Image 1 (cartoon, rainbow, N blue to C red):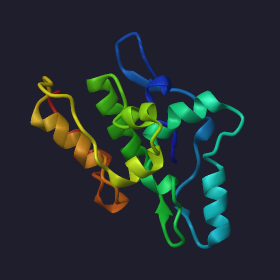
Image 2: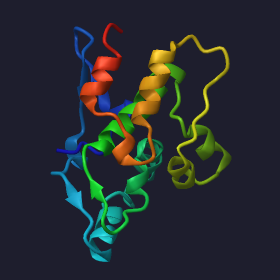
Image 3: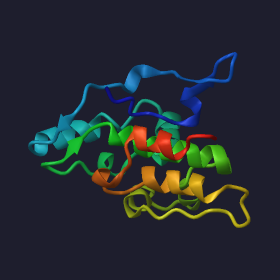
Length: 158
């Protein structure tokens, strides 16, 4: 199952401070195999949100690169949510998504996401372990993204 819309607005905290995902309207069975141009167009259309501009603007900075350009032959799987989780961890640390500055300048979020380049504020208080986890999740090629088990192992003790 793909959640497909992991972002700060979709995470609540329980009474004992455990994160709880909400808004399962974007969930979909996976994997999704892009066999032809029709599959690609259908997948891209499922992320256009024409009815809710605020929803589109909020979700785009957390969207995986393969959801901006669904190439024939690609497979969309749980790595989409791993990307979004990396963006969420970045946002929890720095109070913005890795691509908010791009949006504020009016530049293309799609191009920025596909480049995979992120910058950190200077003199941040976070360990290299946290930065490594973010980078492991925000890899442009889905095959290069860490599994959730690897991320949990990397962050064990935090």
